[in-house]
Length: 361
Ligand SMILES: Nc1ncnc2c1ncn2[C@@H]1O[C@H](COP(=O)(O)OP(=O)(O)O)[C@@H](O)[C@H]1O
Ligand SMILES: [Mg+2]
Image (cartoon, rainbow, N blue to C red):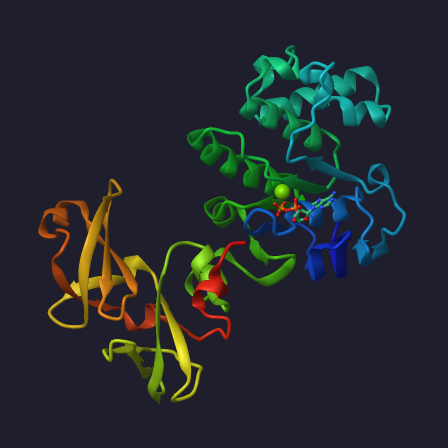
């Protein structure tokens, strides 16, 4: 059963350090997503796991066995490439039957296996077509069926849902997780889409500029991210800069740049330390007092309105109000904002500045 461990993996292309000293262990049967902005090294990392790239430094182990010098075809894994890469001269069925063919299974069995997985991804009706006759989403499904049909217990997926329509993508996310769990697969799934990562993963590994920022369950990373980059990258959040004024168990006070005071439940930094407070829009609400802010614009989101306002210290503060309350607010209006004390997460203010610390380069 596949457990994957990466130790000190570095991958350089000339001067570019695409992956920088990555340590990561993925347990047998775990569904892990590598989430990060475009260009952060996700594809490079998954290629190293696959054996398409030999790392400049470090070691990949599968089930404790070093993969140094072991080619992709001997690593017993299924791989869905970011650019899909189906065999263009083969039908969808022949593509799906590729793994079983390489394994030299009897003809009948090859066909059975191919059909089983094409059915799983709901592509049985297109099995006689060629890749060029399929739309992007169908090609992606065919590519997934081909990877599953190899029978490998380790599945590597590089942006496997990116070519699908929004609706189909949501359905297939669920399917992907269901298939992985029912077959007992270990999955490494690369994506830049935080919603996708949240919905399929046992654990999310956040990557930035070649390195790992942190990892945790979707819920941990959404509610209690350890790094302000994660707070900003996963979901949406307000970032308010200030200083710790008072620190008590279960109740600390932060002074913001406009001298207003806010209360938070948890605060690790010491009194006097510069901090940034992260609070998600759904936990901010208008009240009779609190943080004075002027509404700049409203965005209709269907089930709610996202109200974007600016505090006196020039921080953008966004909050959500139910659709039926949208009429109560208009640009130019001044509101007092409060938020749940336990919904705020306090970070030491990054030396490079908050903007720089959350930038998606
Ligand atoms: N074969 C290559 N040669 C040179 N630079 C590369 C190569 N592959 C990737 N890179 C660079 O490595 C960085 C990470 O790329 P990649 O792993 O594709 O990112 P992601 O998949 O997260 O978008 C980028 O700066 C990219 O230009
Ligand atoms: Mg990529």
